[in-house]
Amino acid sequence: MAKKDLEQLKTRVMRAKGYNVNSEHPDDVKYEIAKEEGIPLKEEGNEELTSKQAGKIGGPIGGNMVKEMVKMAQQQMERKN
Image (cartoon, rainbow, N blue to C red; front, side, top):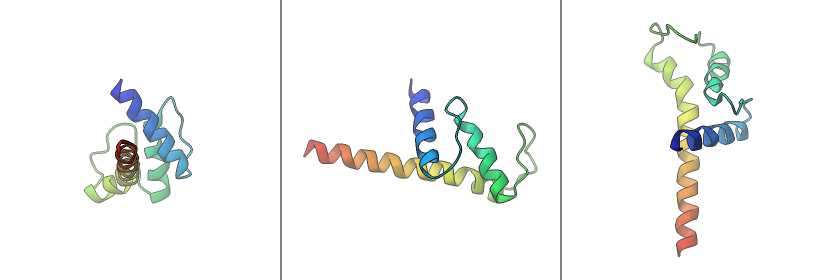
């Protein structure tokens, strides 16, 4: 269940950032980001990517998800007070 919840969060957050995210395959947003960044991301065999390139793809996804989770936690704490 947690994986499904994370996928829903990713879909919601990345759509809010203007990305075209398929709710059935939210991980596909990484290809859209890679294309924007000019990074040749393939479905398999990406060993040649540098850490910097991988970070440019994963950073916006994970970073925005973390920001949203912090916001959700803050709202939840405010409700308890």
